[in-house]
Length: 368
Picture 1 (cartoon, one colour):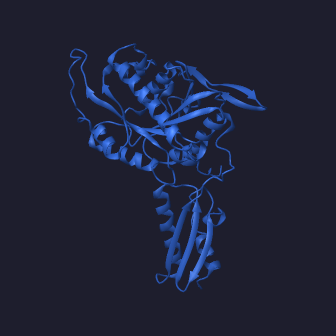
Picture 2 (spheres, helix red, strand yellow):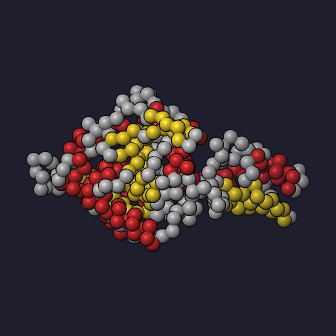
């Protein structure tokens, strides 16, 4: 087969687009194809900025060209990430009056990210702010339990000629969770496209009204939901949660790095060290560093990001979440005070971020 633009396009027609269920040649992501002797240069512009997606696509293009033209062809693949045009909407119409959007993330599961999210949202409401919360942890939604609204369902209302979901309200926080729409005894088994669509609906098909803060509980790791987030709305900043142990810190470091990618560029407000130490009820002055001592504090210093708070491992935190009354509601107990300090530090960092940095750019939406 002769090496030319048409034959290269034919070879690439067998490569799937990272955008969804179409092939690369049908997706509009091929920008240019050039041939210089045996060198085939392919310029691509895709919507997903994740490094593993770009690497996989590059490998697939190289493999397709070698299969079609033999090992002597020299593929060169240039991949860039598309951005929104400057005159594009900044986000869903239903969120036009949301001032700050705070994502709470973790590199791995089991570090207490949802507990931090719930207490942070209530802490913001206690300070007098208007607060919303989206439980974006699609495969493990826990906010209905933590807010004692397992049996509640969002209402509906027609606003400006369109029907919207009306969030459930508890402890002064407006909330939506995929848990409201799924059988609590049935696993949510969705592929990435379905999960992405569900998250977009929680943003665009709900009426949030005037909010000072929207807090987002993200799933652990780095994946489709995280990319969907920065495509759907302009995220003010992200809070990364970790325990002090080294294996959690390694994943937290990756989480911070993802949001700091030039193609994503969401400011990291700081780290939260959860389960910082264990204090038994009968020995309230004692601290046992069972997961390591000040690991997240050390990581925050290395990454030059603030340490927003250190939350102890205390039985009452778990008990409070299980009965739908997060620990920050426990008055002036040491645990409640720790969450209140965390909340104040987050507000301080948001205000500093807004005073010193421009608004976060929203990435181009994936096709639906």
